[in-house]
Amino acid sequence: MEGLKECESVSKKLQTEEGLTLWDARILFDSLMELHPEMGSYLAPRAPIVKCPMFEAACVQALKGEILTRDNHTALCMLEVNPTSSQDREENRSSTTARKLGFAERALKRQKSVVNPVSRYPMVQYIPPTSNVVERLFSQAKVVLSPLRQSMSSAQLERVLFLKINRRFWSVETVVVASKQY
Image (cartoon, rainbow, N blue to C red; front, side, top):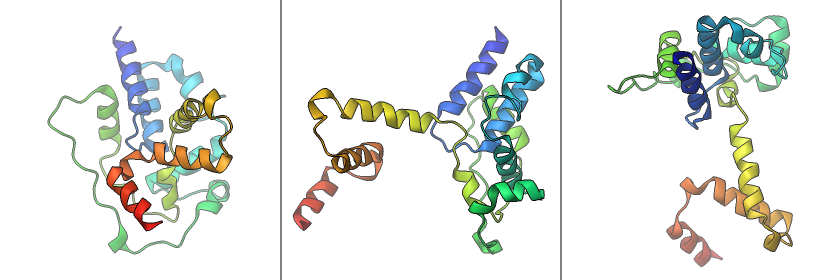
């Protein structure tokens, strides 16, 4: 039963919207494989479920601040930007609260004792490790595009979904102000 609790902890961590990176997911999967080697065929970096192992490996290396191989550099070439100055480096991640840490939090904290260095590929930190966000978007689109609203134009559907997904960025007051401007 303890093994299931660890799997559940990792599963819940992956389903959060906290901004986990591919490196975070790799740490969690590697930690699970240490405890349960039989999961290796499902969670390994080159498992059949990984659609582009080279790209994932390159992202993880970039997030760790490691030097990329030529193949990994090629996989990330579209995300490359000029290196930033040391003044632009990110602050250390906020320290964990005094609450008891679950398996997933302990695994991440143990592996990530230092800040990810700013690299030539800063956008890799925004690549989500799972498709949960996209799946939620499609679920919400299905709700919005009910049979009564199927005559809605694609542009209007896009606007409604944009507002629904980004609800935390606007309020009723924002709508009132925008209405007065037009």
